[in-house]
Length: 345
Image (cartoon, rainbow, N blue to C red):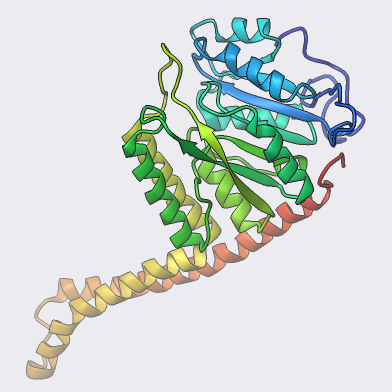
């Protein structure tokens, strides 16, 4: 870990963190006269993987847009000069060995201590000056998360396939959870401290944005949206997003979150499907039995009986998991209430 990471414990470090491990790094601020942020600590978090072509510009742009913030670059096993260039540009570099953006976000929220967190990608596609408006919206409206909906004017910035995939996945979340964000997969976000310190974060890769959005919706946290320009990557910078592979992983993540967050509906639907299928298969058997008093297809009869029993098992499982989910949400809510909107515990 770089030597320029502070080792001292901030005054508001949670008591269960060890003072010997730099798990809570203070996001110091210089402050701007008369600004709202004189007392707030702002951290800019930039996950990076092989972004040497863009990382210097990103750090410089956020330094100019938020001079009072501390900028962190989380290097995720880059094989180029990303870490070296980021450090020279003035960012604090932290190395994350576990591959995947979800693993990086887990380290971000655990290791950095601030009142507000600005998360953006290190590929120079997001508009750094928009961060100020996002922070003001988060602070003034007492929100826990603000999502920047991407507004692009260049075809290279946002490929049509990605636009369609984003709409389909966002629509799926809205269908399942009843509401959603306009741009659910946006990586440009602002978080309050209480969101960052109570977000459970189970994802490993690019499905992390889906998990963050669903967590806010299920916990009924105050969230907001704004728009921000979205640019094409600079020359010699390549996207790490695999359209089909990562799109499939995000869809699987949505289904998994559906099962975890709404188990009674999820398993109830499976139980209903099994029951309807068993009824459809049993109708010919029942008609034959009424006509002849015989049941000639015993395997089908046994299958129908098994499917009916399975449907009741699935329904019971849904109710049990729903009770566990309610208990888990209560614990998350209690942990959330330990933090004020702006400040320490």
